[in-house]
Every structure is written in structure tokens, then in C-alpha cells.
Length: 279
Image (tube, rainbow, N blue to C red; front, side, top):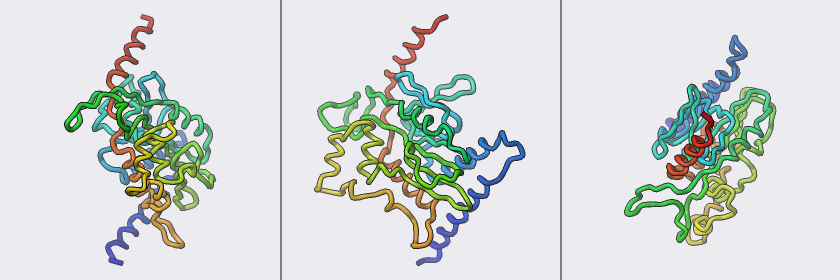
């Protein structure tokens, strides 16, 4: 093995120890501990996800049906195709179509995380986007051919410092920083990349026609790939940050670009609210 490759591995081991040390540090004012840890987790994700994604702290996610999530500690979203962040004084609202991942940062208590995850799960993307594509204009859902995306959802990530020893069922990825070690778990409900693909691109749809095509025997089958295969580990050790790097970015590539922005759906939603407002 080339020494430079071993140096890269050593660098990621060093990064992990720095992150663990910073997360374990106690602030002089306990009220700021949550904000401090969110900042450290934000820096962590900034290092492992592509620059095309932005990361914002303490925002709300909305959909064109008028639903609003609970406050999101970290939102990882794509501004390239959906450059909208709606402002309400100091609060920011990001449309669900733009959001690739959401992160909940907790310390030793996991109280309320299931309810938080449910507030994300209630959001729904809208079709009806009109976008110029290569050689054509795409208008909403084309009923005559399979769609690679019909209803996207963000990857849900829980970062914590509790004693929990497994993945949280309400989240896709659970990252634990405890006892000088970083450990990551993925949701066991997803057996392979086929399951992940369908859940992220066809949320609450049993199986899309394009997914059936992907899983045919005439090429690479997503069912043959498991997220566990992206782990960087030996018999005695795992480089957790490197494993997360490959796992998370593979999931992001399954989504690729979020659904095109349904401007008309949001215009209608805001118009409805305007009509209902009492002056």
C-alpha cells in the first residue's frame, strides 16, 4: 500500500478524534451547548458533502400544501435548481423539493426525535414543474413513460451523544459520538440500494415502473448493492468518517438533483393563504 494512501487514512482518524473532542467540550454557559454542537456537526457535514449543497442551521421546511416542519437543526439542500429560501423576519423556510437531507443534533437525551422526524415525513413534494430539458420541455408528470422521480424525500440523519446502541427507526442514518468513538448505523428497513432508491425518489409509492426496469437482469441491479459494502474497515477497526463519506454521498447520488421546482403549486398555496388572511 502506498504511504500516501495510509496518510489519508490517518488524517481521517485524526479528524474523528478532533470532532469527538470538540463535541465533548463543555461550554461555560449550558444554554449554548446545543448551538455549539450544531456548529460542530455542520462543519463535519461540510467536509464530506459536495459544494453543490448548501447547509443552513435552524430553518423550517415547507411544502406547497401548506405544511411546515418542526425546526430543523441542519438542512442540506440544493440551491442550483431551487434557489428559494422564504424569509419571515429572522426565520427561514426552505421548500421540500430543494432539501436533500435533514439533521437533528441531540446530546444525551433523545426525547422528541420521533415527533421531529414525523414532522418531516408529513411534507410532500408537488409535481407540475415546467422546465426546459435537453430537446424538450418537461411539464409535470409524464403519464406515458416511467418517471425516475415522482415524490422525493430528504435523508433523515440523527446525530447524538446518548447510550443508544442501534439505528433509530425514524431516521435513515444515526451517528453516535460517545466514549471517544464515532459510530454510525443505517436504518435496517432498507436491505439494498433498490430499497433506498425507491424510498428517496418515490416516497410512499410501492414500486415505480422505472425501478422495475433498473432491477431487470440486463444490467447492474440495485438489489445487488448494500450500503454496508461502503464501509471502510478492517477486522479490528472502522474509519467511521470515511464510511459515512461514501455512504451518504452514494445516497445523495441516488437522488441526484431534487425534483424540479413546482412554482405554480407554491404560487397557489401563497395565494390561498392571502385570500384566507383576515386584515
